[in-house]
Length: 112
Ligand code: DGP
Image 1 (cartoon, rainbow, N blue to C red):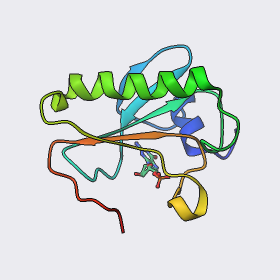
Image 2: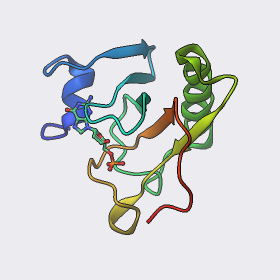
Image 3: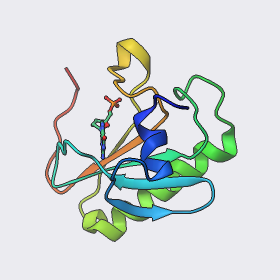
């Protein structure tokens, strides 16, 4: 999608610190990290949010890859958190489905 910042990262039109890429998904470090480990896993297909028609297989792949990469990034022992913000009430700011993976410090709960 032309004016989507994550589609531009996928296309290589703007830089992203990539961690992983295959034909369907891309993972890259968040530009505004909220924890020592903070990266995003996104589908290459433009899907605005998790409530906008992602198929079960793709959702499973995004989450599976997020945990696999979190282990790779050093969160295997102490864990972390996987978050999908959705639309207005969820605080989603980029309208391209993404899984946040956070770790490397204790994380507060519940969210504000
Ligand atoms: P959310 O609030 O769930 O929509 O989170 C969007 C995240 O995307 C936020 O943590 C910051 C990140 N982000 C926004 N623009 C860019 C960018 O251009 N590059 C990277 N790497 N991350 C971005």
